[in-house]
Amino acid sequence: MKLARRPVDAQAHDALVAAGIAPFFARLYASRGVTHPRELEADLSRLLPPSLLLHADRAAVFLADAIDADRRLCIVADYDCDGATACAVGLRGLRMLGARQVDYLVPNRFEHGYGLTPEIVELAQASKRPDVIVTVDNGIASVDGVAAANRMGIDVVVTDHHLPAARLPAAACIVNPNQPGCAFPSKHIAGVGVMFYVLLMLRAELRRRGRFDTAAPSTTQSTAPSTASSTGRSTVVQPRLDRLLDLVALGTVADVVRLDANNRLIVAQGLERIRSGRMQPGVAALFRIAGRESRSAGAFDLGFALGPRVNAAGRLADMTLGIECLVTDDPLRANRIAEQLDGINRERRDIEATMQESALRAVEAEQARMAERVAPDTRPRASIVLFDETWHQGVVGIVASRLKDRFHRPTIAFAPNADGSLRGSGRSIAGLHLRDALDLVFKREPGLIAKFGGHSMAAGLSIAQADFARFEACFEKAVRTLLDPASLTRTIQTDGSLDEDEATVANVVALDAQVWGQGFAPPLFVDAFAVESQRIVKEKHLKLTLRKGRRLFDAIWFNNVAVLPDRAHLVYRLAANSYNGSTKVQFIVEQGE
Image (cartoon, rainbow, N blue to C red; front, side):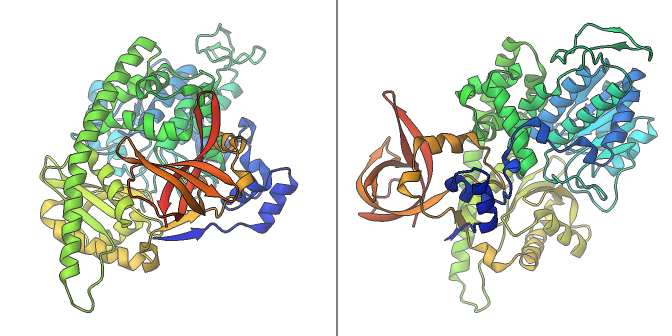
């Protein structure tokens, strides 16, 4: 591990200060690529226009025609939190915009696999009899599934954000910022964000058709009074789609997409609605069952409290449960479902703990074997690939993520599939595009990977069980081909030293009001301290009193019981601690140097 200070763009820093931003915050923002104060604005007027998203206008026309013709719409979702929130946004939004026949279907991870497969199309035809399928958070790789739908006379609108393969499906329309020819600046928008943008464009198309009474104020209700229009359909008060932003924010954070300026705006708007109590009953129920305070909600709550509970349904059971929590308008039903999701999540944690323990033993045993070898060309492995026949398909992604964090290696964990194949989930480190690595294996060893897909940092794949050892070797070679060896050393980016007068409660409050996350990392500082006192609390945390200059600071190092020397270099973040009506700055220690 090594520490590195984030470089600060001096020109951007000076421009931010000149615009009225305090030097402390200007330093933090400039080191994260912010060059102008408008990039920090969270007003909806700053949202990237939907017209920039390729084929969003075409999708809007197609869906408006379908609504006018009363065609049956079926949303086919993914089984993670992004897919669940995208489905909920699609259902609620389409109904708000006048769709009278709209339903959904979500594949079961264990029975159907991922995406719009021919089997899912058959299931949709048998159970929903749709005229139109709308995919959310999937579909860009569903060449066979779209072809099957076309043969059955079902039109398909694909909304997705995953990277496409060389061949696109023959859908009626594809909306995906990562498809060829799309100039939409926010390439990291989540699947739920893409669906939200399609709804914005659809509302504009319906407004153009005279479907809304523009003389009346907008409403959040879909049951506004109506009058006859020249189109043969009634006109209603234009619905407010911003009432869906709590769901869009939840899916965006839970999918760990890069929080560029547009994504930060979306999340900030969603959090503002949550803090003011204007959220879906299911979101409110998830906050209650997680024991989190919605009035002070932050991105951390979405990513680490609500997201895992929604995801648990798709990992161990059926994501239908998660979607129903997000689409019900009955608070009592939402509470009951949230309780079920919480129980499933506890079960997921137990399974994860057992799997992680066995995974750690396997990695440590391999490291011990490598250490015993004395060949001059022996190098530590650049990747981790594991399989255990007792592992659970729904949890291998979490295990891969934990191992990646612990060992700082691209990691793929496999579990057995019912058909005898292996289904794997991978997580990567900075410097290696995981989907590109899998694509390289696919090209070097045709037939080794049955199917794969994903992002730069996460991907899924299937292989034959008999090919596990060969895949392990081929993936290691691909990683070494694509990854700079220097990237295998974990680097912690810090914001340098913190001046004593910068450690204020006001600064902590201002930092907490900003949206931090993937690609816009929360501030970390590093300093040398005199350790005035230290003690173990609750048998697993180190409580500290630190001195820097003239000031004493309270600090805590969670899940660490190692005693510090009298002087210590510590990496830490700022927090506020309230006790007996008094609020003080507290340091949360992340690393010791």
